[in-house]
Length: 172
Image: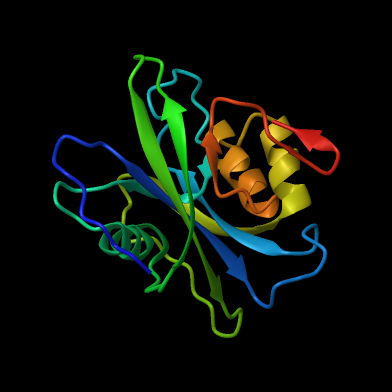
């Protein structure tokens, strides 16, 4: 896996989809690890949403180092990810940045999920896709996280997180 180091001027993000257990042929049966925010992230809603583990990269940090660090901080796990894809996202400020999506598998045997980042993460959970969609429809999942998950399920290699994405009967 190539692990380029990005310049200090870039402000990319890294996210990881962690599949728990064996890969299921039916994505609706697959289980995914999601984190719950410790705060409402300045939305003013008071809702602490669920989303994928990840975050910003430190200046000069490689993609691989950033995702391993974020998984350790937010999930309490040392994961060796497999690179999947990159997606651009236009922020409300008008700036565009790249979100680098990785995925990894973990055995459910002896799995202990405990965050090391209590400032940003209140808890770590394992959900099925249907549970994630139900939470999203209730306003409890970050839209970017569900879009990245759908791109992953569609085996998309790149794209824009500002465009709708469809998987099976759902569009986000």
